[in-house]
Structure formats: C-alpha cells, structure tokens
Image (cartoon, rainbow, N blue to C red):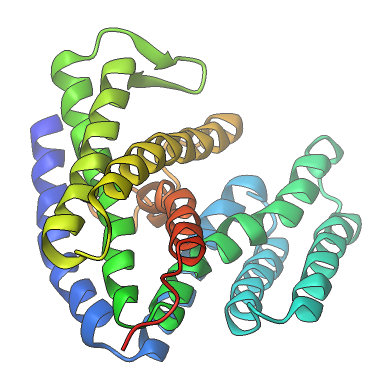
Length: 277
C-alpha cells in the first residue's frame, strides 16, 4: 500500500512540476499571482472545512476573507496604512461571524480564532511567494524554486529516513508517524535543496547562506508540518482533502511551504536581493 501511494505521489509530481516551473520562470507575474490566489482559496476551503464542518455559509465567508487578505497584502505590501487596516479588519470580522452563525457553543471559540488566524496563516504567508516573483526581479523565480524544493526535498528525505531508520518518535501526541530520524532527513533534504540552488540555478545564493538557510528552514518547515497535523488531530481529520493524488489535500502538500516561503522572502529582502535586471 505504501509503495502504491509512493508511485502515485511521484506520478503527480512528474505531471505538475514541469508546468509549475514554466509558469514560475516564463509566465507573466499576474499569471503566477492568479495561481497563488486560486491555491489560497483551495487551502482555505480545506482549513475552514476542518474548523467549521457544519456551516457552509461561514466557510464561504472565511474563504473569501482569506483570499481577500492575500490579495490586499500582495497588492499593498508596501503601504503601511492599508496593512494596518487589514490587521484591524480581519480579526474583527473573524470574531463577529460566530456571533451571527452561532452553531454549537462549545466550538464557537475555535471557529472565532480560526476566523482571525486563518486568513493570515494561509492568505498572507502564501502570498510571499507572489512577492518573490514580483519584487525580486530576475532572482525571484530562483527563490520560489528554492522555497518549494526546501519543503519538498525535506518532505521526501524525511519520509525515507523515517521509513527506513525511524525508531524514536518526534512528537507522538501530534503526529505519531513522525520520528527524530525523519527530522534528520528533513534537514538534510532542505540543505540539499540549498546546495542545488547555489551550484545550479541560483549562484547568487552564497554557499554558507545556502547551508544555514537550508538547515533553518528545514526545521521550521517540519514545524509547519506539525502545526497542520495538530489542526487535523484536534478536529479529527486524517487528510485536509483529496485534491492532490497521493498527497491528500493541498494544505497537506503546502503546510511546510507556508512557513518556508516567508522566511526565504525575508532572507532575500534583508540581504539586499530586492531587484534584478
């Protein structure tokens, strides 16, 4: 069964990755942004289906707020006034919706907090991929690929290390299948992604930075995976969805990316990678 699932996962990646690379490197900036907002909507629908399982109206509102938050953050990322307005408006809406759509009182606090945090967790963090494509010039596509490969190489290496060497559980109460040996694989996979970037498609990334950035984002990406596992365990869900063959939901596939992307973007901005020819 595990072997069959692995084959499906690789087949899905082989079909999707070439199209994604074409769009990242040669597609229009607006086209990539549109793809991100579509993915944001899908991830938000999975997330709020977990936290608002019996209320389609509240789910639709929360998805719309999440996509709107991502669009506003992406469009006005340098306008402090708009960002302050966003930071004030989203929590107010998130807290008020459960008063209107009360439902079960014992789940109201979870729904309110999800409505406050979800738009930032998914909408804002994921939008940083779009900021890389738009703001980093010719180096933007390389940083996007770096982000994705850190998350996906880490996931793949973590899977194999955990399967063949895993003995000690990492965080049993949250994700019983994850092991400390798997975490080592995640870190090594993320470092490998950084080295690949340095020696191949992103030589502007210094070797030392590639190693450190890979190690840090590998750990943080694994924590992002655990955060999503915590959401699923708390709400009694095995997979966030079934939209990606062999991978479960889109949120299952992007949970590490949601953490890695803003870290890579912050790194690029802080170290002066803000424009290219």
